[in-house]
Length: 338
Image (cartoon, rainbow, N blue to C red; front, top):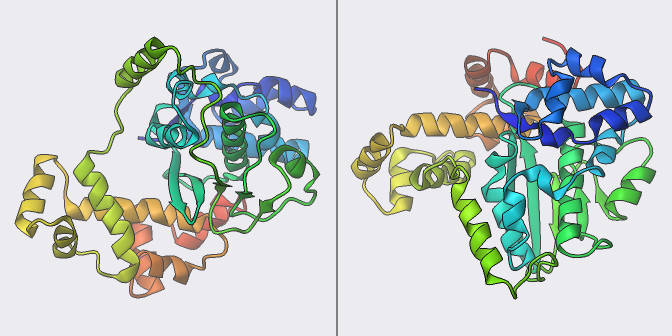
């Protein structure tokens, strides 16, 4: 099943496209979307189609900043019901954790992780479509939208420590600096924000009205829960750590969890999951993520996924995706090829 995104993610698209000389209805039709869908923010459409629309719009308008410009039309409500809960989170840390935990409730292709170390935090973002899709504009839209959201929670002039992208810089950085701030890092190891002061209070919260907090938590309980059961999520996290070490075996994971191999097998079976399937799915998600980063060679990706040789990785990749890693990378970069 292809991941989808709420039509709210394209709020402002028709106006922006028209302002740069595009025909939005024609472009929407080219990627398989209906202009009428955009009038229904809660309607879900294929996330890959949204990304293709943004790339096509940027290419035809000659605007490398198209995704950034679209982010300026974003509203807090773009993330759906989560926005109500965000307003009452006490500080920036809890708000960012909420966004990462409930990413599936507004964009099923988006992945976010919040990590903290040495007094700074990183909110990394990437997209998993399950197919090769050019995603530069979609990623810039996501990062700029996140930055705009944080500014609403803090104050309008707030600046992150850095704004990072795995892709190369545009020919002209003027708009990027104007909208994202002075500290930009391209060809970086991750896409996202580096920020501090996570304990800063949420400017939108009203601590004097406990009923609002109760109401927001009621809304949170009404949302679909994060889709991955705790055990499966833990196995996936361990697989991500152990794959590049070539130690991702069931006994090793069971040992890390403090249970026997038999117990782990039984608990996964009760959830209708298998260790091999979890590892394979984890590899597939990581492969898509790493192949989107030009700084990694195919051999680098093979190592990161725990393969003894690039040839073994290529065989596995072709079985899984029906194409070679190189062809996937070319297609995802918009270069085509087979």
